[in-house]
Image (tube, rainbow, N blue to C red):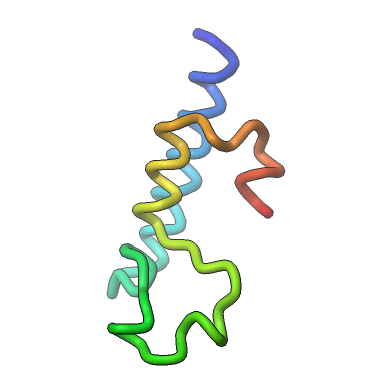
Length: 69
């Protein structure tokens, strides 16, 4: 198994663990100002689980540190 595949599996496991801590799925999908007016003025770097999953699938996280930051 390649290093990239191993890293992806680790990141996917970390993501699943985070998702388990969000039973109401508050962080499951992106939020925008139409749904929550003023959101973009408060949250400067929004992130949600669906975006994280896509980034894992696209190999955008080059290291565990990139995932954490």
